[in-house]
Length: 222
Image 1 (tube, helix red, strand yellow):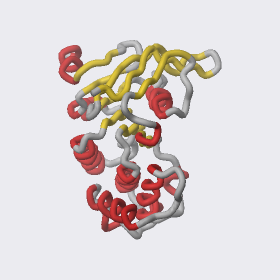
Image 2 (cartoon, helix red, strand yellow):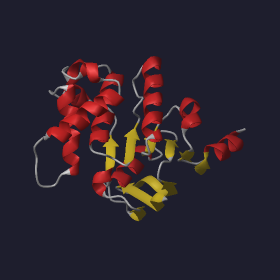
Image 3 (cartoon, helix red, strand yellow):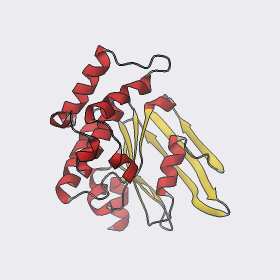
Image 4 (cartoon, one colour):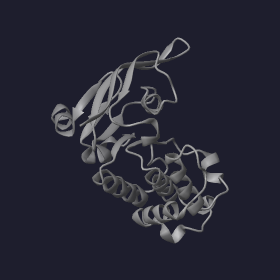
């Protein structure tokens, strides 16, 4: 079932195109890797899909999902690293994404937070400050928060950036597990060599624009 379609999406900053004529569509459960050189509009594309930027032209259409079904993880910033909250508080706050009227945590919210802490393998970090965590641990906390929001579409901007090799492998495994649960994932990455192999769809932005299956992409570069 189709979940997202982008048609000829273009975004300008002043008179310069940050993203030009980008088109693709995804079915529910797809894992899309977005690649390309710096300046080709990868982050801009994610922000357009997330609704943070309005395209100058083209359309972004969702099918069967709503805005609060989308989880967006921006590139890591110092503000995120220094945020004064515990792991449990951050993960539990994700449950509020599903509510529009009542802003308090009930028993079911707390059970869901505990479940996702365990699923992401970070239950032992529950009472630690987010400031104490490694980059890989912090990223898993943010993914657990998205799961608490019951996101159906995960938008991830360079989630492996700054991680060591072990943490990258753990993050790959975590994302494959989340994808296997039925989540649709769009992930921006510079590491096409290691990432493309577990994406079923590839979007390459820039001069060598490409959208298609992993098999089609591998045949193209062979």
